[in-house]
Length: 131
Length: 84
Image (tube, rainbow over all chains, first blue to last red; front, side):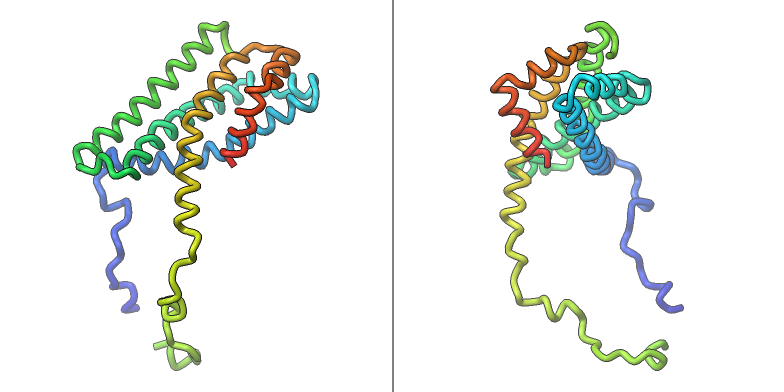
């Protein structure tokens, strides 16, 4: 049982929550959500190709309460992954590695994603309600 | 403790077999593929959202017509291929 005394490498439970962690975790989570959502995009395109009946079926699903909740989640996931993805591309280029910049850009991608999501759904609602 | 009960034939660490053989060779190419598709999806993703918003209450015929327009076909193909 001596094995139990060995040191463990620290995992998330020992850290105080910080925005940099949140942005990283959300990037992974929204990426997973989007890869599921991309299947629905393909499903919609297939329905469009298959004919009017199938397309109407897809539209009914997209306009149902469950469909709208999913669409709302995917729209935010897309915008968050977009904003944070641009942030990651800039960091890949070597920019913004100071801690203060890192924290600021995390907040920026979070705020940007919320603003974009609100804008899109404001447009959807003003354009005459959802589906 | 358990060493006596189970006979271990090879105590060499698996790392020993891999060390010195170099990288798996595809890392840089994969990294670049990820960066290029990511950069492309910034534009294509925004375009796709705008396309879908334009089709909000479209009936079947107009949705089909919009997707069938040459530029939209091209960008949609690029979008789907880049996503996957």
